[in-house]
Amino acid sequence: MVTMGRRWANTGSSLATIMFLYTIFKQWFPHMEPFFQRLFSRFYPYIQIKFHEYNGEHFKRNEVYSMIQTYLSKDSSLRAKKLKANTTKGSKSLVLSMDDREEITDEFQGVTVWWQSKKVRNTRPSFSFYPAADEKKYYILKFHRRDREVIIERYLEHVIMEGKMIKMKNRERKLYSNTPGQNHRNQTKWSHVTFEHPATFDTLAMEEKKKEEIKNDLVKFSKSKDYYKKIGKAWKRGYLLFGPPGTGKSTMIAAMANFLEYDVYDLELTTVMDNTQLRSLLIETSTKSIIVIEDIDCSLNLTGQRKKKQEEEEGDEKKAVEKKMMKNQGEDKESKVTLSGLLNFIDGLWSACGGERIIVFTTNFVDKLDPALIRKGRMDKHIEMSYCGFKAFKVLAKNYLDVEESELYDEIKRLFEDEEIKMTPADVGENLLPKSEGEEGETCMKRLIEALKEEKELAKKRVEKEVKQKKEEEEKERRKEKKVETEMEVKEEEKKRKKAKQADIEAKEEKKKKIEENGEEEH
Ligand SMILES: Nc1ncnc2c1ncn2[C@@H]1O[C@H](COP(=O)(O)OP(=O)(O)OP(=O)(O)O)[C@@H](O)[C@H]1O
Ligand SMILES: [Mg+2]
Image (cartoon, rainbow, N blue to C red; front, top):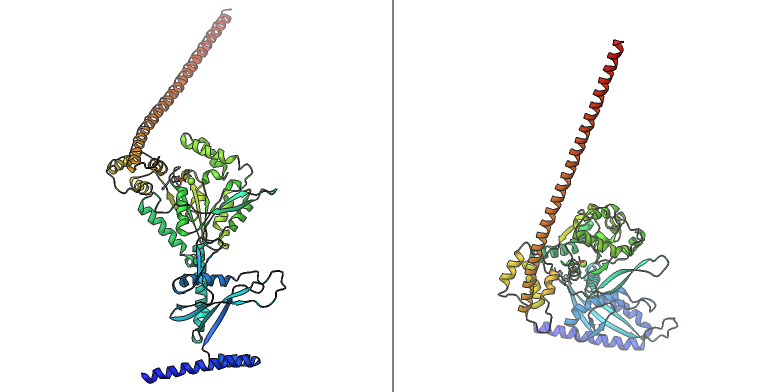
């Protein structure tokens, strides 16, 4: 053991001596350096790869360098002793990277590699239009010769992929919306703001089971790149969210985007002039995004047929649709986007774009949508957002008031289980929201109880009104039928009367004729 230790010590000191002599020699005989480098590399078992921050001229930052920087930021924050903190454009958090001249090791499939961050001063004068930076930064990756295959074929790809993923995670997400441009064609364009919606699946008032199902579906989709490739389908998934206003459709979209860390494209179809514009807008959307078309039933003059149907409808629903349509029609006078244009894009063209995209349609009236729009395969998952139940209420109470249990819960539960009471999560939330500084949770819940009772009264009145209306309509119908019946009877009577009169006239004429004939015979 001692001999072994001594032998290592000897080898170490010999190597140090050789290195020292080599350095001296290099200074005295600089023209011999290439020769020595070749000789040295023959015995040196390591390979080095350099990754410069800038390529060629100094105007474009090397993408690979920035991926490596991001990749190393994950480990260097734990391992390196000296760190640098930067804020990067479009990134939501600080990026920590190892400081210049630091070194960290990394392990990959049992292989060890060393990363060094280096910097050299630029001594050459620059004549370029773009002034040269004072210093050049680069990373050096060092690994053993025997690991060349693993590193070149797998490790580098792993570094780039990981770097991309971390970057994606750290990026500031955006909410895009299309607004008409100022040019003569009014070409609509995406503009964006930072997406900072606070909704998450935790804050979404919905049955836990349903939430889990949606979350699992999203996760499965986001991890199925290879599967979609295998079955030859574009990597996209369509969701249709339907339900009355205020049940959380838009909130659900925000929760989805936050869950998957996707960007959101809020597509306002009424400002899109034609299918060509729609196509270019959709092609511009980036991967890892949710494309949202809200109120699809009112967004488009998709089919005249549907509009007609709506006109035939009566009652509150019709009024609500009309209201929304009026809102949109002012703007869609010239929009020529067609259902087939939209469907073609959803189905076909996207296949060529690659990347993962989710498309979400929302509507208040699912029954009125064109079946072509919502068939499975186009809209893969239909999610009903409905009125608030007791379970959903509990989520809201936890979010709004931080209350998980209360003696008022029994009464609230009873009220929510009453089928006559229909209150949206938006209304429940409004009642639970403290109206003044320091308002107690109990007060808010009592307010909700009152509102629920009021809702029950209203519902009762609504039902009574409906019953009364129905009765009146039936009575009207009955009277109408009676009137028709009477009219028919009168007509029948009239007909009979006319017939009798006609018969009488004919009989008289017959008689007259006979008398005349008899008179002639007597003569
Ligand atoms: N399920 C829910 N969970 C949590 N909050 C909700 C839920 N539903 C509604 N809300 C609250 O009500 C507000 C309105 O909801 P939202 O805009 O998501 O409804 P919507 O279904 O999109 O309505 P519309 O059909 O009118 O677009 C939201 O700001 C949110 O605070
Ligand atoms: Mg909405």
